[in-house]
Image (cartoon, rainbow, N blue to C red):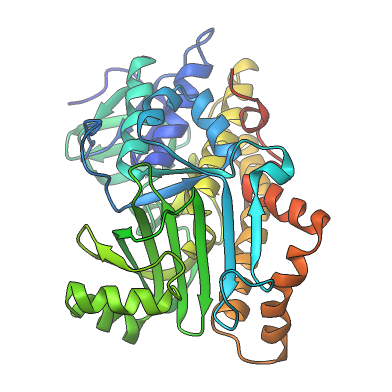
Length: 411
């Protein structure tokens, strides 16, 4: 097909971040509607309520909860959400129940929970559904090429031709949009792979997210609504190859040892999946009439569960600036708007990315004096109410320069 009119915004990539941006734009421009479309060749269906929980899950922070509510997607994700009320973090040099472990509890900071675990497919489906309900269109097409012109961008796809005033690349770490406009990146390999699976455990997860730092990686148990746990095991490449190649029984034995039996014996209840871990940071988030969001702009280590939360903040920030510009009758592809978005988000992401890298370097893989201080620091932080509150607020995403929708409490 070919669009008969010039779009205001064409979002290329309808994953959670791209879909969130589109839904926020569609819902926020009722008085002066923005013409927004999304290209997504693999739109998922919302799974049935009784369907097994998919192992590919994400952690949703408080700020992300508010953004999803603003996008109209919160009712769609609620039926399959799993809130968690505590986090228990420890280094392999101490026992999980010892004074050397760090424990965060929502009750200590007056919150109902510390966040939610939700399937990636549920999040994506709910956001795309919210976008369509607000009048948006999702096209099952892929980018072929784009040509940036003075007043617009011409986009050739497998489904026809589009013209837009602004193109947003929400198409992941291998972003074709980013490559098409020549935006460069810093990228490095962690030489680790993340193994994800769903497991049953002898002990209840107690609505707690459990995380153990080890010399050869990081292991997290994320609580699910059905009583099982989703694991994310970020293991050095050689260990990951062993874990993926062994039998289910052997894998459970390795997992029991790596978790220090914190939840008792484990049993796989899903297939194992894996993906290589890398860090990526685009030198610029924008070019002429083009902006990048989510993994197209930055990829961080999963150990802190912040990847999708950073992306949703990208979406909310860009949506706010575009809607404000719309109110002032300004071109959505104006350089001023895009520069403001880049300045706002790039510094915030850089801070979080550096912090996550430090956790991986000093808590999971470090052996020197700084690492020993960091490992003991978990227990020190645990004894300070003020430090714990600081870290909890960071995890909730309720501090820093936030877009308005991320600070608005759900109705």
